[in-house]
Amino acid sequence: MDKTRKIKQLYKSVPTIEGAGVHLKRAFGNREPEQLDPFLLLDDFHSSDPQQYRAGFPWHPHRGIETITYMLEGSVEHGDSLGNKGIIGPGDVQWMTAGSGIIHQEMPKGEKNGAMWGLQLWANLPAADKMMNPRYREIKSGAIPEITTQAGVKIRIICGNIEGMPGPVRDVVIEPEYLDITIPPETTFSHPVKSGHTAFAYVLTGAAYFDKERDSWARKEIGAGYMDLQRDCLIKNESLVIFDNGDHIVVTTVADPVRFVLVSGKPLREPIAWYGPIVMNTQQELRVAFNEFQNGTFIKYTGKI
Ligand code: FE
Image (tube, rainbow, N blue to C red; front, side, top):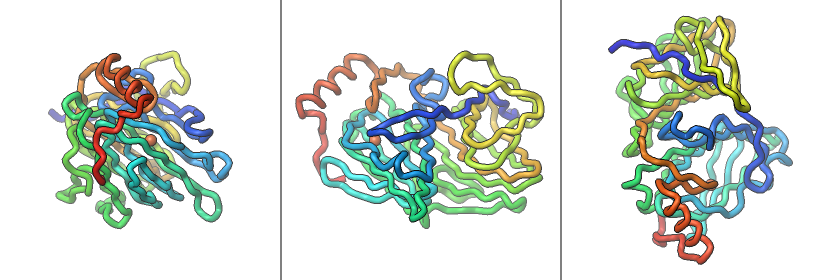
């Protein structure tokens, strides 16, 4: 097959308050989780005002998912109830598999000028792995390979494989690809994405066409954040592009460069029972999880991670 993926849906991220009062933009989450299967949520924390994020995300549980934090500016101090601790600094990634359960807190810290910018993606775990032992993968910025193509496109490879160069995160069930891509002006960039995998782009800065013909069509839908797509529509920051099926994407810039993350993964096609930070397959499993959290038996694995 040689089919360029068209845009299936375009959303603007929506201002949301989470944790103890953190102002963020939600690109997707908790609405039609089947549409982005195996991904559940993407939050964009971007602020130069510490008042908007200082309160952070105090102690909360996770089970049944992976949370993937990618810092662009500033850092996040992380700690869990078993005593694991770390700082996710600028350019670093924390790929946390909550599995059977983790109780942690995440506290954002700005740069000297107050700037803080990070993305948190939630990926679902298949039923067979929901109760696996938790694990952290802390990837320092320097361990993330960056390549520059002949056309001057810069790609940071967090997960996946570009021109034989693998990213540091491997052995994830959903076979994800997670790339941070910067395309200079007046450039067309084509990239293979496995047919059948869910794929989306989230624009960080600049503008580009994410459709080869520049006249994409998007299904009309009621709901906050939806954007109607027009002919010759340049897509700008804080926009989420969900791609239709195909085997590659084409992104074209004009006067401005563009920077975006491109994420894809294999859909799980399993029932989703989701409440807050816990995502299981059935309501019964959710009830068990919340009961265990209340009665202090939530944590199953107490070893050092
Ligand atoms: Fe969390």
